[in-house]
Image (cartoon, rainbow, N blue to C red; front, side, top):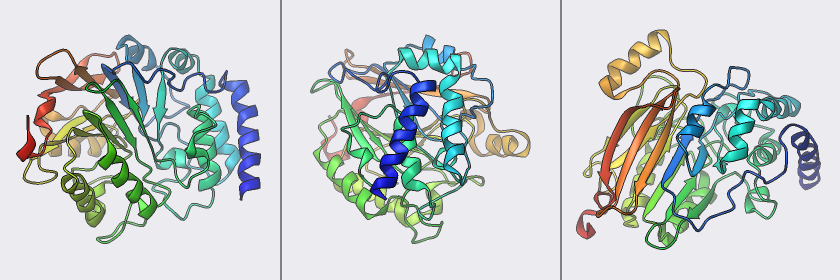
Length: 345
């Protein structure tokens, strides 16, 4: 398997050097400056018009976060997965965005390689290498050698620090069920250790699928009730403050929350931004509007988190933007609201 991984890396380097430009050029290089605007999105069909990238560029994000379905491969042949990344990397609109914006990310099922795929996908190790090449992951990163693409990264000085927890919800994923798991033992251990050690004021938990809601369409953490309860208990038990969830997959935008008495001991927000090239249609759009009401935005969109570190208390804005970059849904809060009840500032 190690020899096979080495061969895949070589192939990917050649392919992306042709279509994607300089290796590692778009991975963040400055981790010291505080992040004031983080943009994020998901569900990007590489063969559809890539018209949203100029709008995201105009929003001037300090960082772009891919939340999954970055391309749509849905392939059991490695060459097809490679080719889908190559199509997006060769697109002038995305290429211009990529040249100007630091990028990090994770995957979901369609870029993983199989719709609703999980731990039994035969190409998952090879596909992992291709995702990391797409993200310009530094060669010294442990993501090249570990099982799964989960990772964490921090930005900003003490007191103004943002930490991203990029989850892998595919590599270890069971079939849905009451006692089924999403993250796997290795990733759960990692997540608990990293949350406990974090000194970040804002912790963004990046999930390919929605965590809070039990929607009647698509994949959600609600299909894995024990795993979701375990996630809430982990955050609550460690008394970790400042957590906000960013999620994708649903082809709609919505800002949802869970009350302090229902989840982690303070309001837990789940900001869904999806999709970049396509959105819900027909009966699914109707169902989404019935489910979410005025909170939902059912056209192409991306999300952003804005942090005003200079305000007292620190203010956070959660936004959904339309395809032109206009804010169409928003929610503001004080960062100190996201603290366990007994220690709230």
